[in-house]
Image (tube, rainbow, N blue to C red):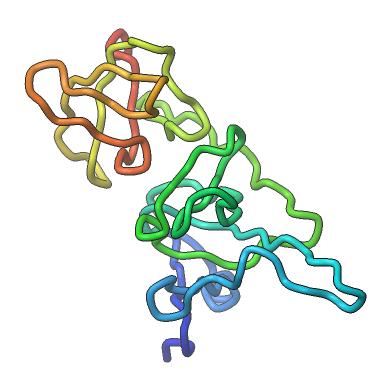
Length: 170
């Protein structure tokens, strides 16, 4: 049975107990709480979320609602912006707002751009979909946090990228 307002995340090889306790909320069915929750005495406590961009395929990240842009969050080690419509699932972060541990770089060399961004102007193979899907050649633009297609006009914001690897990787 699916919990009300939530999604069960099932990772390959996860035990049934892990699957049952890994409750994530769907931001469209249950919007995230406000940026800060008022406490007794008038002080507001910021709300921190653990979120994912694409179900299971991307590493979770620490996110806070943006103070400057409505409908957006800041996330990851460098507080990059992400529109709320790109949050696939979320849950409240544990006490102390701990960031999740860094994901490892797999043997394939494909990595999460949020945690391992390319250098500015670096040529990259980029996957826009999960799994072993086609890759396209892009250049990383650090100034606007996007991949720019080398042969074409497509600009891919960082949050729309599943993974990337340097062109020199095999």
